[in-house]
Image 1 (cartoon, one colour):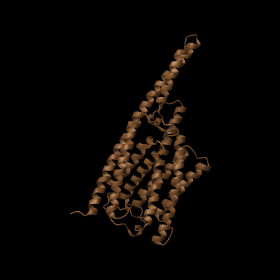
Image 2 (spheres, rainbow, N blue to C red):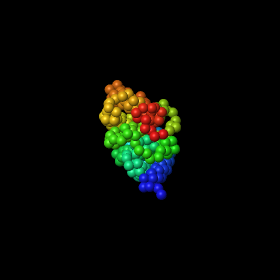
Image 3 (cartoon, rainbow, N blue to C red):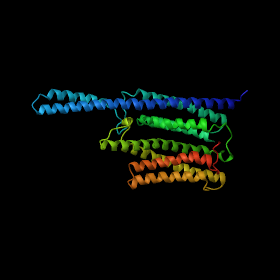
Image 4 (cartoon, rainbow, N blue to C red):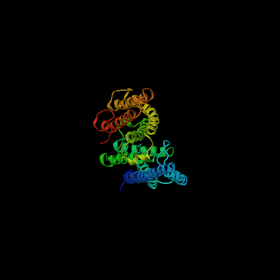
Length: 350
């Protein structure tokens, strides 16, 4: 007969699997929203362009002596109504409230999936009688949960539904990696991790990584939007209709910069708290272990990003690429270093 811990572990795996499925459906809903809404906006823009062309023709006829006043008046009123229907994302990241059923479904499913995943992570911790941060499976599931929670909290401040397909897509990838790539049974922590410092150090690191994930998605969209804006200025055809739902590249850059500033402070605490924990566990603050080195590398990259953008004028695509490089270092530290590099932090559990 299975014990309570074994039952909790089984329920944890079930909840995590159900959460992954719900996140997948939410991801599909967000993608559908981008495709459907961009087509709607394109149709409205085409209609407005046709009406403007008609209005210009009427003005020319009026200049030749025709009665153009009523026609122009009707066109102007119509334009006002149609312009109100264009609900592209503004620089305040406001989508509008009159449409986007698929986006609302995506948000609702994200909330549901987050609750289910949280139940799975909590059940895992209860089964192990510790915080569920001892191996790659637990890091992936907890990290995915934190990314989803941070995204939902951000949604209460700004309308970031245009990021849904990108952020939730990353969450799905993390859960797939956990369930397929790193399935690990419940086990005890190694002695070095059996400390209250794991709660303090890892929780701050996971929160910082979740915020870095959000800014990574913004930086990628910034590069896409900047390319789209350049094509528009050159008079080239718009091949990325879904980007009509995202704000300007400058707005995305400013938002990523502000969030990265907060994330950098949290990562600084991660570095400092890790050194304090290392002194307690191994009798030294710094030992050039691979994990320690890459944690410092991440700090240096984001410090360079903030400094370059604030004082050296590294704006636009250069700032976006620096942000992306920083996040790639986070991913490298989280995956490659944990799995392939031997050291005092070799606790991947794979």
